[in-house]
Image (cartoon, rainbow, N blue to C red; front, side, top):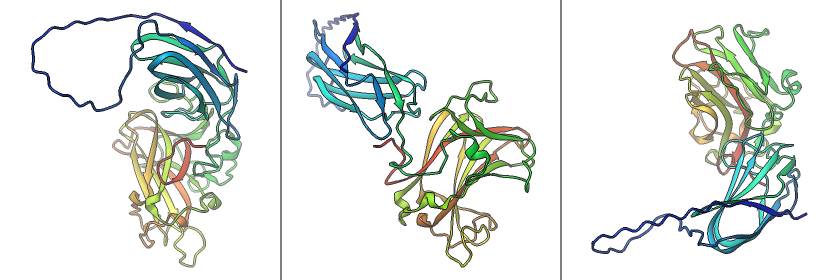
Amino acid sequence: MKLLFRFSIAITFLIIVTVFSCTRKSTEYVGPAYISAPEGFAVMNFSSSSTTADFNPAAAITFDATFTSSVSWTLTLTGQTSGAVRIFKGISNGFTGLQWWGDHDGVYFFRKDENVTATLSFFGTTMTGQTATPIMITEAPVYTLTCGKFSRYGDFEDATKIIGANNWFPFSNPTTPIANVDQGVASAAIDYTGHPVPSVEGLQYYYIKGLGAQPTFVSGMQYTRTSSFTGLPADASQVWVNIYLYGTGDPNAGVELEYQESDFDGAPGYQGTDDDAFVARITLNHKGWKLFSFKYSDLTPSLNADFGGSGNKMHEPDRLRSWDIVVVKKTSPNSPIEVYFDYPIITVGGPFKPCH
């Protein structure tokens, strides 16, 4: 059903009169034009097509609005649990059938069972408007089938699918857990700085933390479901590897993403001693969640002859068979580090972004 709007109005006019003498020159403006809300500006209606949104399978809800005059407007959709945001902008006296597919700007995904507020704001006034009722997301968008090649269970929403292997294999030494390492699925971890680690997508993510048993290497995990990579093109410049990583600003915390190919040398699958592995190296000196995306052709060959450094040195994403995430200490061998990651996905034509 259509939802009516409510408004809080607090309009402030600022008139600045400046008198000076100068020679007038023509000026070129770079960037978008803006139209301020004039005196007496009002919103005649603002509504959404539904109070609920089911984005799986892909479907859109729409928004309609009518203003008394053309103005620069912004429609901001905000998830009340996730903090996800989607922003639309325009210059007009309203809009009809403006579609939202559940996609987001920034890093945070909208979630199932969260309320979303829809807020209108305008250039030149503090007037805002909201739909009378928040929009409840009954099913969040699923990008794993439409936007790229997803590592199965890589949203980590079901911990039993990771702990029980299911093509995910935590590193061991050789069959027992690595000493001084804690790793697994979490939804409300506390990082070493004492801050809670929020979820970037869904409710859960994977973490690896600790000192490890070696000066550099801490631990890691391998994904081996070959069918997840079927259909990737041979052109490495068209393939991108993507993953969300959480950092605390610690320059000692590092991640190596290693993508492993089978070079058809007679041995089945990927063999570290005679095949290629290509690596992206990341220092987690950022804070919070961040999407890291790398063009496959920019990945560097492994330098370790026993672990992917003995292949033909050709970037061949169509021969990708598995990948590792390896956690390493960069500067301080006696200081524990931590890594949180989520939603690894391989895309074609550009970095990952929500699609439908």
